[in-house]
Amino acid sequence: MNKFKLLFLLVLMTFSVLAKSTKQEKQFSEKYIKKIMKKATFWQFKNPKHELWDWTNGAFFAGVFAAYETTGSNKMMKAMIKMGDANQWKAGPRLHHADDHAICQTYIDLYRIKIDQRMIQPFIETMDEFMATPFPVKEPLEPITWWWCDALFMGPPAFVKLGVTLGDDKYLQLSDKLFKETYDLLYDKTEHLFARDIRYKWNQDEILKESNGEKIFWSRGNGWVMGGLVRLLKELPADYSNRSFYEIIFKEMASKISKIQQEDGLWRASLLDPNSYPGGETSGSGFYTYALAWGINNGLLDKETYLPVVEKAWIALNGLVYKNGKVGWVQPIGADPRSNFTSASWEVYGTGAFLLAGSEVIKLDR
Image (cartoon, rainbow, N blue to C red):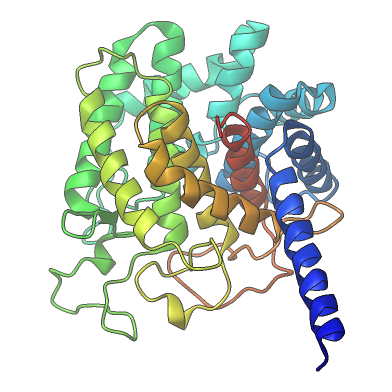
């Protein structure tokens, strides 16, 4: 190869690197983030899935409300009001099941803007019945009310949002009690991660392991927890007596999660056995990006340590969004790591996680 050809290749490579760097930097601009959030939201509106009160849409509309706050889109506001009206502003039908309370987070957020009692009255009545009715324990899998880690995104933020809105600590105290039960049952104090449910704890007679011998920690399940912690901490007063309990868990999990981010910027369906689950998983990765960015923005996480993690993750997440706004690489509904999804796989909660991530990335002081 003569020197002119070599020089040409070097120039070409330099321009390619610069173009890639410029494109990636653009993904952090306010204009770009608002545009991609709108595109993802509106694609999902055109492709609805599940009952509107379902937990899947609870996560999606949590993201939609965050996108509304970010963009000010009147179209998003109208869609949320339409959803609430369609649900008659009610929780799902299962009284004690946290999944059926997740949608109420958005009801309360809308109430704070519209001050319309019909938006929260059904949930107040549900909570009255909830507190008056003992949880029907089903051993061994369901020994407590919130017996699976995903519940910590679904239930606690709804309870605490209601309590803060009404100025009534009984809802916060109930959330504390139920959250602590889940923590005691499922939190691994060595790994600083949550087992999905009691089946995945290593103190059982029959121990479930990944193929590499590691414990099974589901990415989305732990993403639910970190996202739920953010939504709790955003609500709890700075001087709340149990706030430090949640902050400690958040920081422990953030440290662990940042250390197991994969080279492409994403997290795999199984956190401790990434090689068995190729392909970054959007819903878990989206919630981690949301949580870590929020932690930086609110002074709980060291910016120098965590900003590179968030930047890498946000760039990677944007690579999973189709030109039409569809958010791909989302693991289907489940309860454990699976290799059952592709770049074309989507779910409403994956879009919700992406929107939540964008709502905090846009606030980063880089």
